[in-house]
Image (tube, rainbow, N blue to C red; front, side, top):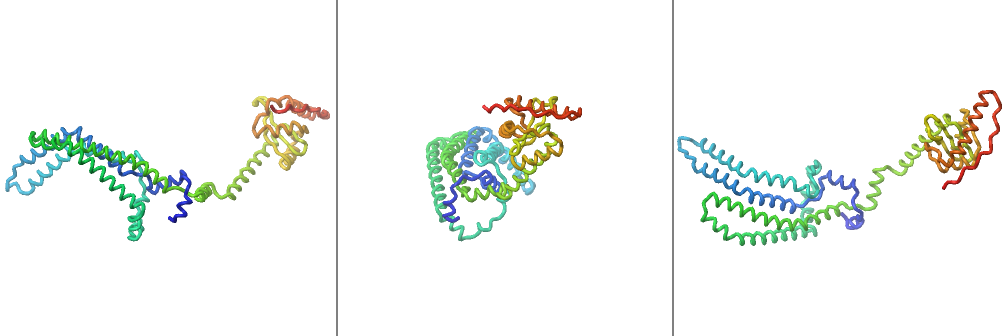
Length: 373
């Protein structure tokens, strides 16, 4: 990657970038942490299972030494005895191997988690390029990895020397003990040594884990252009989003206009605003705003109301208050109850007059609604 591109990548990776990297098998890993956990498990297993493991190995040795084969038995007998000894050996060390296998499987959960990626299994032919391989070896990163390896070796070697020096007399004393107790004691001492080595590896892992997380995060950093491009790919182009918004607004407008013929009254400004109300006293606590609009939309609401014989009432203050204070589907606010009740009472009087063949009553002087608090 060019140095300028690396300088441009100053932003933290997005969630999609992290998920894509995980699908490619690119997750943070710490070999030192896994080695420390496996070594610690092995040491604890040897320390705790030394008697059992030593007894199992002792029985295997006795059975092998007691095998009395003669030339008449043939090679098949020896192969059978060898297979039986191998089986007994495997059974003796099976608990310890099971513990170490479990540790090896659980270690990735501490950092990165389990991850299987088919992409990571595909061959990467650029890895076979000797020029790029030498470049990786003699790069700054290669030098850092070399120094880390030397530091690991130095720490582990120092701890190993100190442990062996401390246990030297105990190991020498094993020669004077009976065979079975000596084997069990040797395994216990080995377990103690592995626990000490695991402590050294754990100290190295305490430095390596944050470094691995930082390197993983740094390798996935993004530039602002990459973030904008990812957002554009996820949400679509601005033109597409605008077209979707226009379509949604058009659909909402059509649904709103479909409610106008079912309204009980349309309150107008008379030209700038129009608000359609519907009220069913058996199902509603208060009248609902089923349509509203300004200018051209208000004109279309008035036209639909006229086509379907919905009463048009001119009440400019009430129309402005309803348009500003209510959304579609909302109940009218309590402060407008008395004014809207006056409008609906007049509408019901007009309907009753039409049904009885009498002339419609003149519209009253509607009370101005109180201002919102």
